[in-house]
Amino acid sequence: MKIFITSEQKIKLEHLHDTTRDGQVRDRIKAILLASEGWSSMMIAQALRLHQTTVDRHISDYLNHGKLKSGNGGSGSLLSREQTDFLINHLSQHLFHHTHEIVAYVAQLWKITFSIPGMNKWLHRQGFSYKKPCGVPHKFDAEKQRQFIEYYENLKVAAKDEPILFLDAVHPTQGTKLSYGWMRKGEKKTVKTT
Image (cartoon, rainbow, N blue to C red; front, side, top):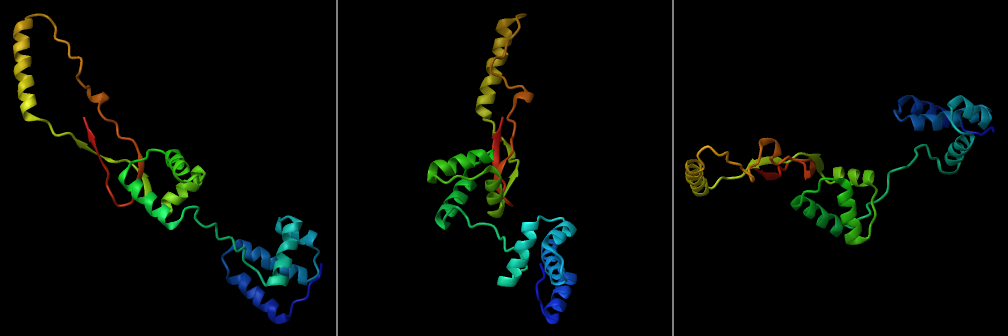
């Protein structure tokens, strides 16, 4: 498939090929230059390791529209500005541990379906990161602690040699375990620990 391009266009394309960093743009330029030199689209496809229909489309896009870039810019947001603001506010106030929980929340609220990778990208674009909250120890009640110590001392005297069994004690390995969740970057969420 021989196409005709002027020598000025050829010089411009060769310069653009040498200066651009985008490999897809360079492949499009190579396809156009080789087609202008009389190569068939099958030969160009084999040389560039592309499908023949892709090469034909690159050449057609250039001849009809002067297009060298793919023009893929992604899609628009599925949420309106108001929905986005509401969700950001809700996520800032409530800790969601998993992306699928946020996907389910959005689907329930607005009947809008996100994929999990899509929601992950949305969260990162909105300034969220997946991190662990800060654990803050509970403040103890000095009066309750004093009452317990007094009760315990009396119990030890009354029990004599009998063992005392604590049923409500929390072993250190059974304390609050912090798990990751989606939080705004730069903000710290705190969780009270035992």
